[in-house]
Length: 90
Image: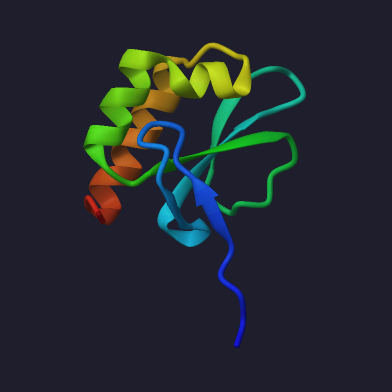
């Protein structure tokens, strides 16, 4: 039986399967981008595909603290569209 990789959401702090979460990466240039493939190089943090978790991470700046970089509007829009596209899978 194959082991399922688990990661923690920065907002709700719940452990979930890696494939159920969105990965955000801080690139070498210090920019935060949504990593759809899960293979971009750079420091990564994970977030549930849930509107409540997105709102919480924006309010508490959990993603910014985890990656030590400011979140831009482009990333917020990308995360929102990813949640809409895949639905709130909780």
